[in-house]
Image (cartoon, rainbow, N blue to C red; front, side, top):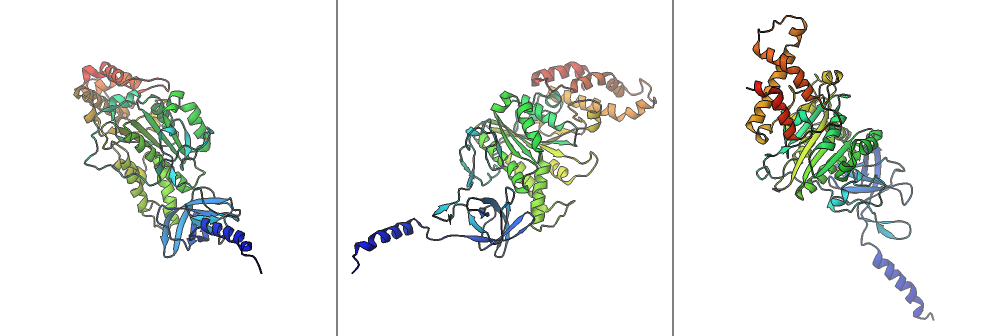
Amino acid sequence: MIPETFFQGPLKSAAAQLKNSPLGIVRGRLRRVTGLLLEIEGLRQEIGSRVCVQGSEFDQWIEAECVGFTDEISFCMAFDPVVGAKPGAAVYPFGAPFFDGRTYKAFPGSFAVPIGDDLLGRVIDGLGRPLDGRGGAVPTLKNIDPSPAPNPLKRRFVSTPFETGIRAIDSVLTLGRGQRVGIFSGSGVGKSVLIAMLCKYCIADVIVIALVGERSREIREFYEHTLSSEARGRSVLVTAPADTSPLARARGAEYAAEVACYFREQGKNVVLIVDSLTRYAIAWREIALSMGEPPVTRGYPPSVFARLSTLVEQAGNGENESGSMTALYSVLLDSEDSVDPIADAARGVLDGHLFLSRSLANSGHYPAIDIERSVSRVMPNVVTAEHLELAVSVRRIVSKYFQSRDLLAMGAYVQGADRELDTALRLWPSIEKYLRQGLKEKYTLTESVKTLRDVVGHDAR
């Protein structure tokens, strides 16, 4: 007869294993990979939920996010390159237990993105993973769900000027704290230089910079050469270079907006710079087209324009009386005269735009801001009546001069025939010199207005 104690050891071991085992395992399987999409069956996921696909090894995982579904199939898109995936691979939701060959454990995925004061001075990717080699990951403090835009009836008014340190902007196109502004530019017109000057000289507590779709080479140059040591200490640099997936690029811009919202709610004066809004739209276009959404406006599906509005409306002043969030978005143009749907949509949701002119850049005029085509819609709310009158006078003189250049080039104008044109011809050399600024030059708002008064004060109407 077998003694009773013979079974006690195995029974206790089995009971302990059963106690530590999950009550149930939620798992799907990889059905097909089509372009950018991972088709998963047997695992119903909601939009925005995260999953992990098992690679060829137990410790190899592919993180993905659900971007759509149909019937029993969930469509997901990976953040990183899809390497090691195979037909029928196991797919688990984040936090679900899986068997690693020896025991059950939960996949250590990114349930949340890191948002907090420890981000200052760091360089991270669109999922909050550090890239600067400064130790471990920053604390995970906030869920990945996007923050809703503030209540429109509780938003604080834009009533305080925002100093950029750039004379042409502060004096003629004065911005306000909490304003959303677009920097419209073609390639090679000085957009990156202007953004560098804004990062160096603007007055802000925190600067959040999102480099979306940029060349990888330029990211290190921007961080080490463009940003000064003082600017790096108050900045958060979120990078999603051109070789990352469309979802990683899109989430990079949205994550940067989340970080800026966090600091705004802490009562900080925040500046958000997204370079570029066009590449953010292109990323969502790739996602939408891979889902089968029809293109309606020059290749862009309707959802892209909804995404643009959602991203921009997060910025601006919130309900907190002591915080602000000024946002600057670069918008790339194929041609200065072309009708770009993203540029048109951006102009409709932004509070102003700075247009960079190729002709000015070719003539060595930097920053190449076209005063005629640029506008700040909140300027009347943040400057004095005298300052506004000076700015209007400069715009009128610049417009008159450029409208008459062909007449002057042909020698068909006789001095004295047009008093306003005579004034423009007399003041143009001084105004052109005033609107130029070197990369290492910085001017305060008071200095800019005072100098502008000296240039055109007597001729202001």
